[in-house]
Length: 516
Ligand SMILES: [Zn+2]
Image (cartoon, rainbow, N blue to C red; front, side, top):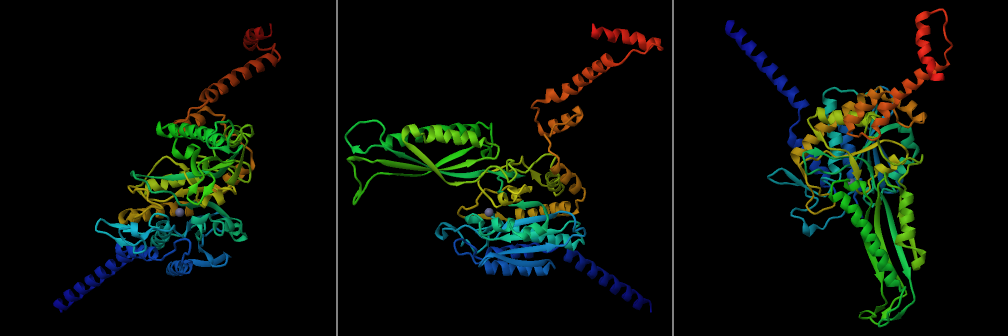
């Protein structure tokens, strides 16, 4: 009997141990399974100009189903599906979280790659090679994996969390994000914050972006009298254009110098790069050589940060780059405004006025990540369509210790960085989806016009030290004291004397000297 009892006890122990191992493995999945899901998505060829959107959406829907997320496919333009997933929050009155990503990737020159761009090859160093491994299939899958982990822990969101997978970002987003941001569907989501893509960071600090530069595609054109190639004369089209090119080149150098000397980050200056030069009279063997042409033009890709003075730049273009006095004209092939629909610069605050920023900072830190100083994205991403509507959007792709290889040959992401990024998103989504205080403060602040100035010197000093910005700090520190002194003086000056109290009277006679 005793032997039987011990045997039973041993069996019970074994069963218990088995149950424990099973539970542990269900909450902590084998990393190779997580990586293989990422590889499966990377292997779908969604390269422009003929992306296989259907296959990508089918795959993502299968993921959504495995996570019990609601899904909806919307085609604003035929055969350009946008997938919308929803994780219902317990308080649907609160603004929601939108985890945004795009499904397309840029084309790749296969012969320049070590491994096929859609093989998602995992090398011995843990690098996963694929077009889209950085831009931005990693982020799409990290969102989903983070939700998988949160669900496994039993986490329940208070705010609803939406995920959108949009087409065509790489060709401007007009049939994707732009139409989505404009739609009634989007309005009905009541989005409070959008996360979109960022860039890999070669350092150990993650990059984050609060704005982007607006593209101004400028073409300047010069006209002049045509003439013999041997004749020297003023105001030929070529001469006029070359003068302008020299002026533009000097402006470019001045902006670039600010980046080189560290005065400004790349996204904070106006960049100008020549995109084309067009002049000359064609001949069967090339160009006519003994003729000065009557027209010449040059195209520039100009990128303008939201912090720039757009009017001053336009004046510069009209007066210096393409002046009428040199027979020049100009036109914009594209000119995106640096202001939102309310006339404010298109940027998302990254100070204490934006709780979403503080939450992100905190969440990254809590997941043992380091966040670098937020900056302006040097090019364009879909986030602009949401920022234009006055909504906060943060560009963030958690890839540290990774060279920036978006749109480059041999784009890759190390599996360890990918897995770490999932933990970062887990922390962010958890913080965002549980955040409840924000709405009332935020909406009342939106309604009241504010210059952002504080009245309390202590409230000024704290953020100034934190932000290392002491601009006009003397005003905030001295004004309240001077104001108090003036107020006291004025009060004393206008207050009638109180005859019945000797001490007060004495004081008043001193104060009375103000009047004399
Ligand atoms: Zn992208």
